[in-house]
Image 1 (cartoon, rainbow, N blue to C red):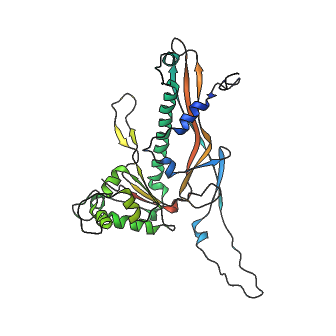
Image 2 (spheres, rainbow, N blue to C red; image 1 turned 180 degrees about the horizontal axis):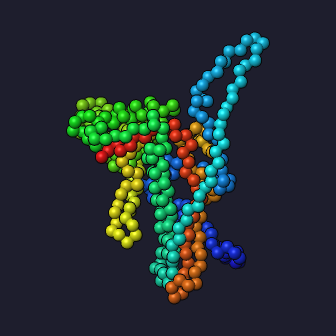
Image 3 (tube, rainbow, N blue to C red; image 1 turned 60 degrees about the vertical axis):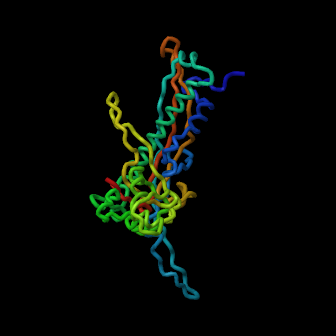
Length: 318
C-alpha cells in the first residue's frame, strides 16, 4: 500500500495526519485567546456577519392596536459586514541527520511541530491582547484609565477602590458583562487589595489573598480569565527581555457561548476556516543528507463584533 502522506504533483506541502494531531492537541495552558475569542467555523475564507445597531433592541414603538387597526411595523436596520480570515504559518527545518540519530521514543518532527504550534498560539495571544486592551476598540463611555493613587497597586492612601471601579463598569454596559479578562500583574494586585479582601471575607481585614472563584462570586461573573503568557520583546540577536503579553489592564465583556457569525449577542469571536494543519516539505539541499521543513498553519480572524458589550479599565496597576 502506498504511503498516505505522499504529496500529489504540484503540492509540495504534505499534510501529515500524525503531525496535524499534534498541532491541534498542543496547548500552552497559560494562554487564554481561545476563551477570549471562541472559535467559530466558517465555510470559506471570506465570511459575513450581521451587525445590528444597539438602539434597535431598546427603542420600543407604539404596540397598541385597535380592534380593526393594523399593528405598527418594526423595521430592523442591520449592517452586513464582510471580513476575511487570514493565514498564519511557521516553518521549522529538521535535517535528516537529526531524524536518523534521534534516540528511542523521540520524534524530531513531532517536537518541531510542538515548538511551531506553541509560537502560532503565542502570536494569536498577542493579537487577542492587543485587541481587548486597545482603547480604540471601546466607546468613550465604556472605558476609564487609572493613574496615580486611583490605580489598584496604590493601597497606602485608601484612595484606589477596585470594588467600585469594577461594579461601575459592569453597570455601564447595556448587557451586563459575564467575563473578566485581566493581566496577571493586575490580577495579583486585585486579589490582595483591602477593599476586595474585605468584600470577600466580610470583615475589616487589611491583608489577605482571595481566590479567582471569589472574584467571580463577588462580581457575579461566569468566568475570570487571567492572561499569564510571556513574550520576549527584544529584537533578534539582542539579550532576552521578557514581558507579560496581557499587560496591566482589565476588561469586562459579555460573551454568549452559543453565538456565531449568523446570530447571537457577544463581544467577539474567532472566525476559523478549516482546522489547524501540520505537515512536511522535503528539502534535498538541507545539510549533507537533506531534510524536511515542518509547517504548521491555520486560517483565522479575530473579530470584535459588539464593542458596546465591553468595558475597559486601562492601566489598572502601575
